[in-house]
Amino acid sequence: MTQLDFVQNFTTASGAGEDDFAAIESVHAFNATGQTALAAIITYTKPKAFPAIFKNLTDLQPQNANDLRITNLLNLTTEAGAGIGNGGRYVWATGTFANNATILAKVNELAQATFSNLKTKNGNFTFANVFQPIPSSITSKSAATGGTNFVAQYWDDADEAIIESATQNFIKSVNCYTKSIGQFKPFLYMNYAYPTQDVINSYGRKNVDFLRRVSRTYDPAQVFQRLVPGGYKLY
Image (cartoon, rainbow, N blue to C red):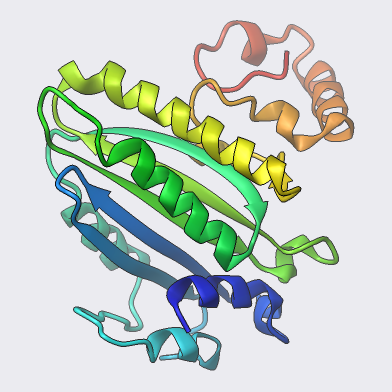
């Protein structure tokens, strides 16, 4: 079993996606020199060490490091912050498609094809695919899906246009691929979305109409839609 197999099985194996306390992020990172890194961020919100739902993943070898433990959000936040370099600039984007190991592997291939030979002025950047399977405890009886967020980190503002363009090309290539095999899902997770991604309309017409009715009822002057800068608007 590979980590991508585990990500797929997390939502499809018997009972795996029905544990309300379990979540996983599968991180596949690459840098400008071709080096790669693989990590798994697993979370269990009950104070239980090494829950059985993660056994197939935690048994995978080799492992360079393993810091699984029972801790609190302050410690986790401090630890996560320590791994972020000072002065870095970030680009985020997101997509949703069927949770399938073959598809996930292809998305990694598309990322490498887009960024591996990218010529930046600084020559120093990192990009990563972070796959987050959506468990059936959330999707209920809908088809098992997985979300991914893409992150690019770079240190020189001279590289901004190059990284931004590559990110948009990568998004297009992933969408074209998943649509071509009938596994594209329109939903976009707002917290990870690229500025030009159409987050609101990805919720579907019925939900958009509901949000607009609520907005007109509780914000009749449309202050949050017209006067508040930034963010994704309903109109």
